[in-house]
Every structure is written in structure tokens, then in C-alpha cells.
Image (cartoon, rainbow, N blue to C red; front, side):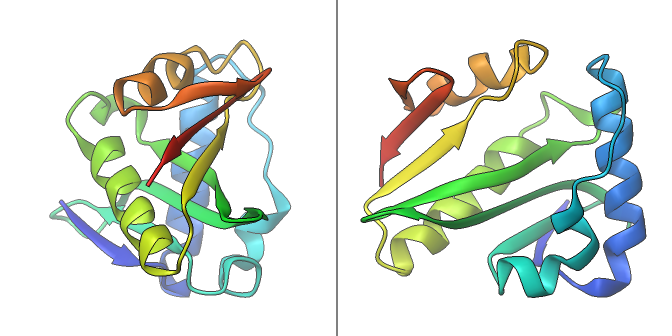
Length: 139
């Protein structure tokens, strides 16, 4: 696995992976508008995990959120490849860049109850609840 900054040539493969990941969670797969224009929306704050076959197997991005904090977005891993460290590597990449950009906190919105995995994932990485459905971690 390799993690790279987002490139437009992977857009469709990334969107397909995200839709599959949502479907695996039992959600109706809908497309988030920001994923159609990642470069413009995230401005260099979005990464892709690629397989050895050059396929998208994960993604993550972040945006400024509040004073000293950045909010994680679209942390997804291909459903059949979960629990192999891909999500952890993507999170570490985003947090490293947040810190480099001067943020002191990383914030994650947990989503609805159907995102049960995020409610287990973030605490394992040092995140604590800061508001209903939100967790944060000092960088």
C-alpha cells in the first residue's frame, strides 16, 4: 500500500470505493458533492491509499474547523480490506499534515449510528468525545 496526495486521475476509482464502503455499512450509497471536486474543495489536504495494482483502497481529507482545529473528512477504507492498518495509516498522514500546518487539534464527526466503526476506530487512536457525535485529539 502507498499513500499519495490526491490526483484527479483517481477520482472515479475513489468515488466507486467510497460508494462500496457506504453500501457495506448498510447505507444507501450517495455521492458527497465534495468528492466530485476534491482538488478545489480540499486544496491539497486529501490523500489516497493505493493498492499494489494502483487501485484506490482508502481516502481521507481535512479542512480548517475552528481556532487551532482541523476536521477530518471522508476517511474510508475499501470494505474487504478493513483491519489491515490502512485507516490508521491514512489518519496518521492527515494528522501529520495538520500538525505541520499549525493545527493543535484534530476533530472527527462520527456520523450517524450506522457509522458504528468510527465510534470504535477513533478512541483506539486517542480521540475523546468533545460534543455529541464529535471526538477530538490533541496533535
